[in-house]
Amino acid sequence: MRAPIRAVAMVNRVAPVAGLHPRVRASLCVTMSALAACASSSHTSSTSMSTGASSSVATTTDRAELGTVDTRIGTGTRATSHMCLYVHYIGLLADGRTFETSRTPQKNGAAAPPIAFEISTGTVMPGWEKGLLGMQVGGTRRLFVPFRLAYGADGRPPAIPPRTDLVFDVELLALSSPLPTSSNAPRADGTTTCAAWAAVKRER
Image (tube, rainbow, N blue to C red; front, side):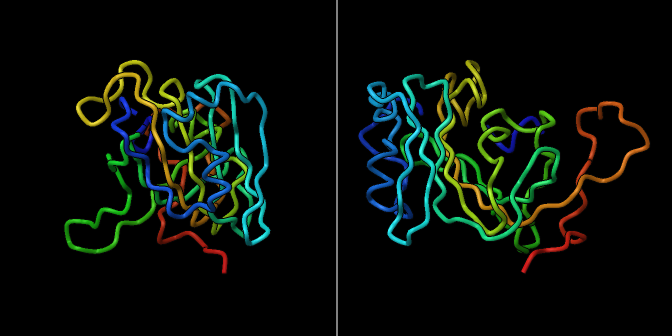
């Protein structure tokens, strides 16, 4: 799994932002066209939500850089390199359409388990590798991922056109240590390094 999933030209619609405080929404330049307009701002700002929690907002002069905002600050353990992350996500195009979600029910109707991956190993897209570090269990984070940190110039047709910037809403449900290995050699692509969801101890 190169990425759990990975906007097109704007059509005067915005990605859903109902969960964001208006001041966060404004400072973030939520739509992809507005992200381009953020070229006049070249710093990382911090916006306070009405709850008093702080949310880091990346505002850059280069759309090759990543934007993030914590829509809910978690209270659990913080994600660091080489931990297994268990997340649910929704992937959005710039016009607000969902192109992929981990919450699609299984064929038997049961709820889907979260996806799991070891971060900082290159098993997910660079935008996830960078954007999810520091997130706390129980939190939700919105990632604004430029195409260079997602599926690249080729995209992933037909769902994701070439050179497509993406938005992800990610919920971090749990963390665990990777499964032990017999050596320190790099693991081959596709090697399972994280325990099954049913075996993961959840924080209360």
